[in-house]
Amino acid sequence: MTMARVEPTAVASGLSIAPHGDAPLVSVLVPAKDEAENLPIFMEQAEAAFASDPGTYEVVVIDDGSIDDTWKVLESLAARYPFLRAARHRASRGIAESLRTGYLVSRGRVLVFYPADLQYRPEDIPRLVAPITGGETDMVTGFKQGEYEKAFVSGVYNRLSRSLFNVPVRDLNSVKAYRREVMEALPARPDWHRYMIVMAVAQGFTVSEVPVPLYPRHAGRSKFGIGRIPVGVIDMLAVWFELRFAKKPLLLFGMLGAALFLLGVLAGLAALGWLIFAGVGLRAVWTLIQTCLVVGSVFFATGFIGELVAAQRAETRELRARIEELAHGRDTLLKR
Image 1 (cartoon, rainbow, N blue to C red):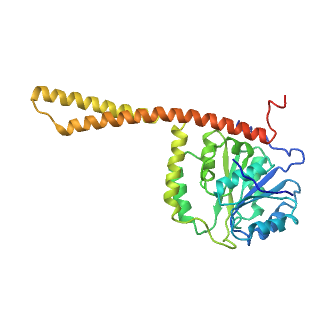
Image 2: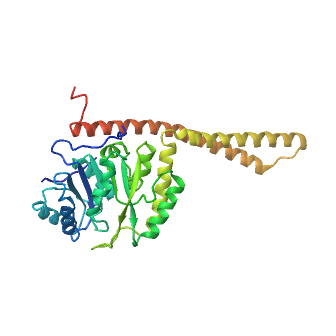
Image 3: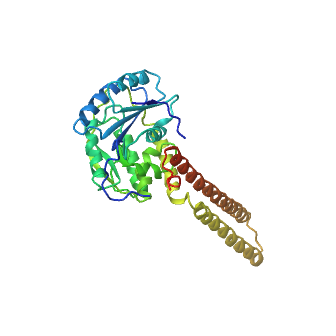
């Protein structure tokens, strides 16, 4: 077992997934911030859940800048559980960065996002993974069963998400299992893990859900609350814009600019005709004309700048994928 300190920087077919060499088939990615009390119990439950299928699973715990004894606990657990791997962030970087770190450390062809707070039990991981290993789908999300303290926040988030995105599942903010190719295809952005399903479906991956029971937190306290709703709404709108217009921003800003520009021109012609035939000038109309022409021009310019940014983003994403391939020895050109 390796304790690593990591600083991270084609749609799958419907065929079932077979183990690859000595690498585990499934990597359970567990972001952990100040979870020293929960991790020993989590690992005990994981060992029991995986006992019937040895060698198939590994658990990758990412210590995300914990200020308690989480890292020391992981070092002691490493000697007891051979399927445990760990990575560490010196400072807290959030769940999204923790999952990407876990992805880089992990070896499995199926990845599972599972929190360390024991609100979800490891015994449900095989059920979460089964539809993927059976070739039925690319992603599986857990549909929470039971009462929990964040039900209101989660309900608002899911209702807003369903109103904006066409996804065939009811719960987007839960545990998830997904093919490794899904992670490789998603853009890196803050809090992207909450919109992983939305972005994956937009790229053609299939998704299904299975019910998973939810239990009271064993120790510690939740890092999320009602204050996350405004942030979540803003992030949701950002993802909606990303999916609809990020590749062609001129489509949005150009249309807005053209509409305002046309409105200004029509208002100008009407005001000019009124001035000629009635001899009356309307100051408010001339103000509207100037505003429409100026703002319309700004939207047009913003769209052109956005097109340049979109081109740079595409190149950067391609370079990042290339660098990760080289770093992990998956460069197809070098293997020819």
